[in-house]
Image (cartoon, rainbow, N blue to C red; front, side, top):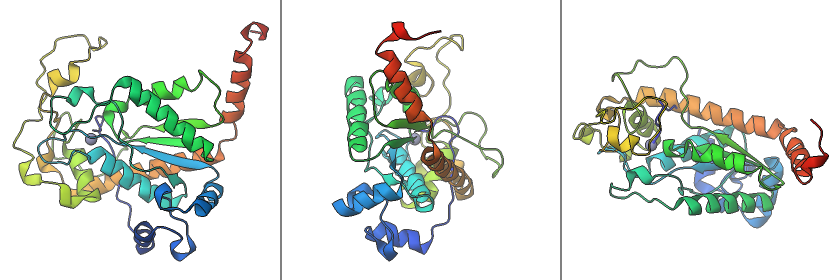
Length: 297
Ligand SMILES: [Zn+2]
């Protein structure tokens, strides 16, 4: 789910990109960006070509209203990421959907791993990526339920020394402009934005005729101050795990959203490649943290 008016895309598929994605290894002399499609020797070349920059697109398996597939976030984040690495090469980690989704455990098809496993698996995944040369790892978040998890994970990298840098790109970004939305009000999950995005990424999986069969309205069942958080807030407001109105979605909005999302991923890849400071400063921090009494104010 993208709960803050996600974004999106519309990048033009070039035939070369399609060829590369379909055939994988070294189509037209280019390396596939997909980790699982590279040979061991080509993986080494890919690390060189990407300057050790790798993407970890992060999805989830959860209900998406009555009309979108369970893997909507995974499908859309991989679509945007694949388009981006075709424009700015980076190695793309395989399907990853082991995130925070406790709030949808009451719906069919949700896979909600424990918090301990989420953090351990993500740490071991980035550790393994780094051991294989991914010294700059950009986690591309496609799921609103990870909004708190991923900054926590990033901050936790300061606990122990790592020879790599984790960057987190929030998927929930919108930019001014674009087609006028047809729905009014909240559009957090499986609503007009996300439905439009999926019409671009996987139009065959969108059942628009079912989108109005459930309500995505805010049921406002809590009465708490805005600055007071409680975990049941999402279910209290959106018990159908649907927020917004997907029935009015049009592809043009999805193309706009995806175009901007892809541009943001490309920008993040380029920024990571150019970043000479983060690892140096991390190492300075790790060294000082071994003997804090010796540091000066
Ligand atoms: Zn979603």
